[in-house]
Length: 221
Ligand SMILES: *Cc1c(COP(=O)(O)O)cnc(C)c1O
Image (cartoon, rainbow, N blue to C red; front, top):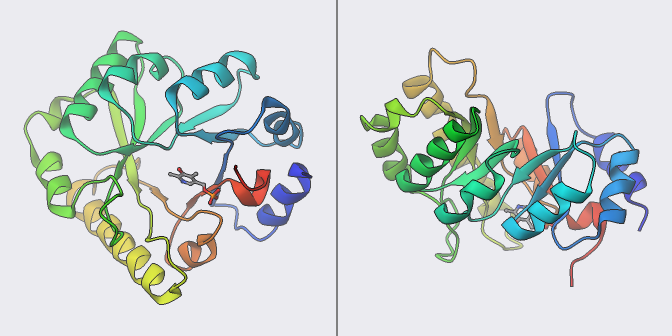
């Protein structure tokens, strides 16, 4: 697996304002280091235990992204170092992240995961649930989290038009939230959407953060 080559192939097609998160889940440190030594610093994991193990054994200037479903009782393990939590999907989880961030004297960057796929197996908030959270009194007391934007996953399908309509929907929600709830904030600037199979469509629909695994590190078993 020529990780550096794969990374550069993708990066050469990306505009400067696009952040590429290399999703290293299930992959060994050696492959992460191949990417690191090629200059890459943003990596994504979706299991807390794997993330802790990698954080401990890999260079400390890596920006670790948590991209999976996060259980509240595990937030404390990643709060000291996590760079961005992509998939916050409840007020309870936001409350816990805020508390753990406070204990670590940090402000943790967070994205709200919005459910855009037709499949009901996917986690995430409905648009109205998200609005409810953003308008709540309690949310406005969370001084140790910064909502940086939204994240979403399209339906796993070959139907490009469906994927495009789901990503466009998320981009519309992103723009609406920015204008309604984050108009005075320069921090709401991140739209995380697009994986190996659909990132080109995601870019067309306004994504500025991609989460790509298998195209960089090879298929997972
Ligand atoms: C695994 C995963 C990815 C990367 O998937 P690939 O198809 O390997 O690029 C992106 N986002 C999330 C949330 C994932 O769990």
